[in-house]
Amino acid sequence: MFCPHCGQETPDGSKFCQACGATLAAKSPAQDSVSTAFYERPFAKSQGAQSDRYTFRWAIRTCLKERYACFKGRACRSEYWYFCLFSCLILGVLCPIGMTLAYSIFGDNLISLIAALAILLGPLFYLLIPGLAVSVRRMHDLGYSGWWLLLAMLLSWIPLLDVLIGLLLTIFFALKGSRGPNAFGADPLQE
Image (cartoon, rainbow, N blue to C red; front, side, top):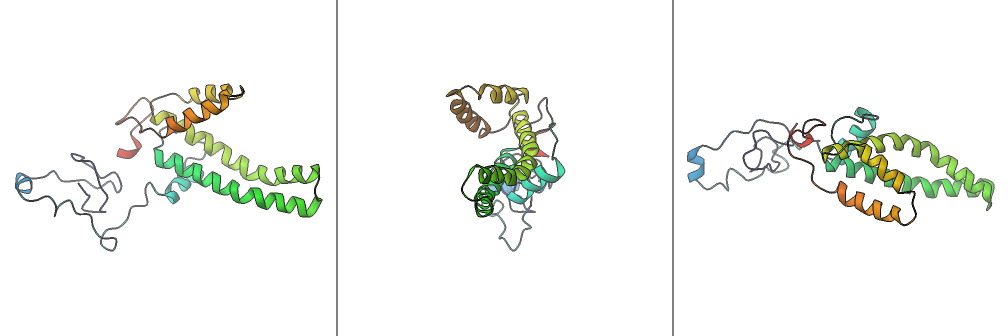
């Protein structure tokens, strides 16, 4: 079924649209007898207002501005993975720039490597706290305490175990969160 307000697809039987939060009317018996193709057709881009929720910009704004160091609550998959993409893009752009600047200033020696690391430390530390916070909130969405993430980080210092833990965390964070409220708060997809 599609939301009549924003045109986003919603699960059948939902009372509220996950994208715009609009109240969805229950189907009447008359609608069940008529073909549902008309009622479930999404609006064209020009007709419905596209919700800004669960987009790249929304996730970055949420992680860096609204919930910068918030370790409470839950984070949906899109919030976590968009922030990971943003972090990789920032570091992917800054690493070559930092190395180029350091090489052009100090030449090809150990000081240039130290200077490049110093150029990267600012953005790296700026992304560290919200990255940890969104990871803990993602653990909460899956129904687990954030302390399990700390245990995984400590165990990742063991050689060869770090690759396995990284792979397991990647798979784990790609799983769908628990439906409905859990011990860590309301479902972020149903707010």
